[in-house]
Length: 396
Image (cartoon, rainbow, N blue to C red):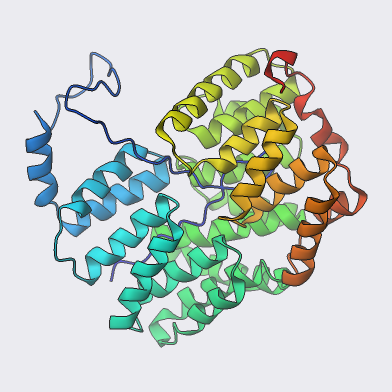
């Protein structure tokens, strides 16, 4: 069985959080359109024209497509996502495995409603399909639909799936008032992680990293980061989130300075650079603005979290709040809660602050530091410094 690689999205935001991380792929209008100029020492092209690419796409195996989706997630590579989509588009009579791959691609592209429809189609044919159950639960967690999410976890009732069921339930519990219990479960699962596949181990570690962040658990963070990889984008994001929250801006800069090609990591780097008074922050803000301008031209809507983060870093408070509100309609992970709360507090929007406090009350979402900031209506002293070094030209 191809175990799910959950797109748990610990993606960029101002101070903490995750993920989502997948830029919507750009589809050129013609073969002549220049997309990117590659270095002179690049390997030779695999495809001489669109026909050769389509021929290759039509004969691609599900394993190849799955590998592309994995690369898109782990390396933050939208080109891999575009290639995977092209391969999937060539399949006219999809089987269950293809539907599963399509659901993963749709989820990566933030088309959550379409992804859910694909997953439910799979489950209508095979109610015990483990990958579909896990992916659907993870997607529902992203959207803050926790009751429904855990209902799919409980359906993983085969004894051979016990590890996945426990991790699935712990993921939901960590967001719904059972953080301590979830951490205990995850600690037990982490002891088994060396014997699990890399994807499942990474999933467990990322949930632990989020739990450590919200509960200020230094011991847990130390344990997790001692075993988590240091190459993939989700792992780098989790490390950067922790370092920024601890005020280790120099370590964050060193960690991310060679990763400016990844939007999520670039935003984290800018955050650290601003705190350090690094003049390169201005250059990187300009680079991020160029990317956002391209998204707007393409009319992409899968980047609202990143845009809200950029707006806050550039001290554009009202646009940041509007973007955070729009993002809230799609995603409600830790990263989304924090970016929305930060924008609402900075804008002094009592209505948005109350909405978030009610969400935390209703779901019992545990993040004491954030709850305190919302209750007091002000950001802690470290957060206030974020826009300290941003030039007036970036404000609006």
